[in-house]
Length: 115
Image 1 (tube, one colour):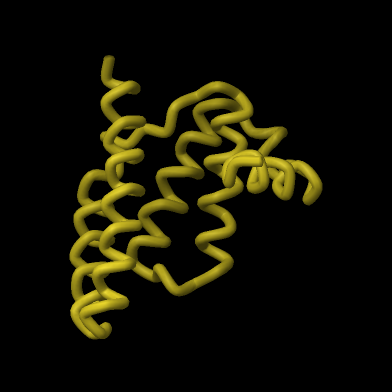
Image 2 (cartoon, one colour):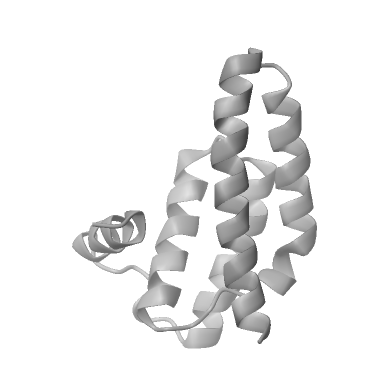
């Protein structure tokens, strides 16, 4: 099972807290969760909210509005680079490779949304 399917199943088992919201409200909730988690990326509750919003959007076949969170993405990238610089070279390379793969997937989703 993919990570998304695992996350979606977990979200659904918790009761789909965003189910009653309109599509626009779920989009706005995702933007708020994304921006909040960019500023407090160690806060698990914020990350859970972001994942739940993403799951709800995906279940509704609504692409996340990545164009609305470009500055938050830049903050996340800078924070990640700062944290990465504190690690050993070997661990840094392992994480960097995972990050590159994740970022390529993010860009692919973002480009698909624009087209």
